[in-house]
Length: 333
Ligand code: DD3
Image (cartoon, rainbow, N blue to C red; front, side, top):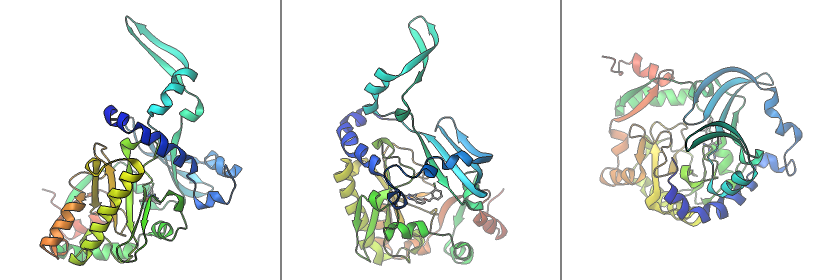
């Protein structure tokens, strides 16, 4: 997973840039509550009643749980965080060890590190909708090829009917949430965007760097809406996003994967910046469209994304998949 040589190169940047920032990371709610949050905030999960484990992964060291939190549906995501190089000396000096086995030159232990070196990242969605619960259930997926007609007759009506809430996006753009996490902002109403770490990134190491650029314009739902006129916006995001990441994290553009998702998980145009070598969820060819390719495709044909067929995977329980199936647009044999 972690590329040691890259880690060494960037070690200075990681400890100098990332650690102080993560300490400061607080939501605007938390700011109102004094230094360490209220007592209830510290124990919110003590009343969590597990209903079911939606999925888990020993390799990713994650578990997704559906349950109840004060009578409301909730999804809790737990993830063991990576071990960072700057924690090593303390891990070695201040841990206790229980011997598991000794054999020839080999021995294994259970190591108990101090609590602050042994954190679990917890993401809570509450109240969670049925869609949130479904999203984290292990699911088979199916590849769909969406023509321009399919988009007009199936996908667009479906996303309009669903009206997924992007309130959290507007909160970011209006500085009502996560304002202190913003890495860069271009406030221009037409070309502007906000660049900030995605939820998925704990910001403790560069290995799994994940930022999103959220555009200020509110009328562009996805890749399908992009025309020639949006090229300056896309070039601006690519150029200034890369510069900001080099400035803040000392990571050059040659280490970045910059792309859009189709279908996106929320219909407000955003661009993903992830570190090359990090197998980020959704970075595969069936969902990711490199921003550089998108720009060139629009340069050669203004209606490229309006006219072309686009393929993408849909999960078995996705309502959109049912729509494609009912329209006879799913290849099942
Ligand atoms: C989401 C896609 C959405 C569960 C989860 C995440 N980055 C976000 C709210 C604030 C954010 C994100 C939906 C929702 Cl875990 C359901 O993502 C977010 N803030 N991806 C940031 N920085």
